[in-house]
Every structure is written in structure tokens, then in C-alpha cells.
Image (tube, rainbow, N blue to C red; front, side, top):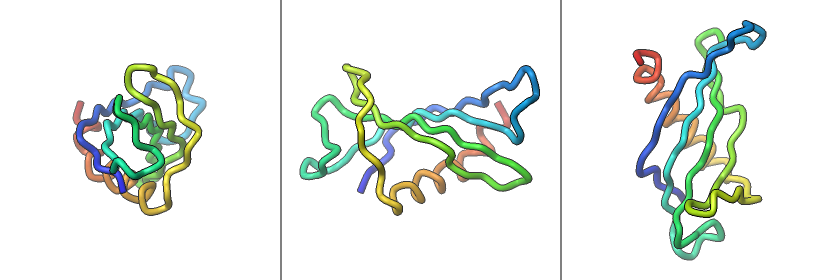
Length: 99
């Protein structure tokens, strides 16, 4: 299981108006247990793309990166971890919308 330690949340602009809904980019610093296959001594973060359309929010894409090297890792999160990130995004959505 992962633990979100820090985050940043930014609304993405669509200057041409071709994308539906409101899109957000999040950077989540995460901690995982040492025995987890994702573990890195350098630390990890997840770049998340999240969309809100017709008052429904959903995670549309994420990538996991190792801090320092900024190299993308070829891992997928477990379903419960994806659900946790989606819940986190929904809880912090008001904050992003008020910026």
C-alpha cells in the first residue's frame, strides 16, 4: 500500500476548447514499504491526469517516477491504490478549483 506524503494540483488549460471537461495534473509524492516491488531509496512520485466531466471525476492516466533520476517506472498500481488516488483527487478538487 502506498502513502501520499505531499502533492501539487494544477488545472490544465485547453486554449482551443477541444477537450471535454476540466482536466487537472497532480504530482503525488508517495512512500511504499521497503518490501514492495515499487520501493526506491530515492523516493517516488506519481504524475496523475484527472478529469471532471458533468460533475463526475475520474483518473484518466498516471505514471510513476523515481525521484532524482526522473525515470518512469513500468509498473501499474493495484486497483485499491488507483481507487485511493481517485478518492484523494476528489477530496482535493475544491482546492484546485478555487485556485
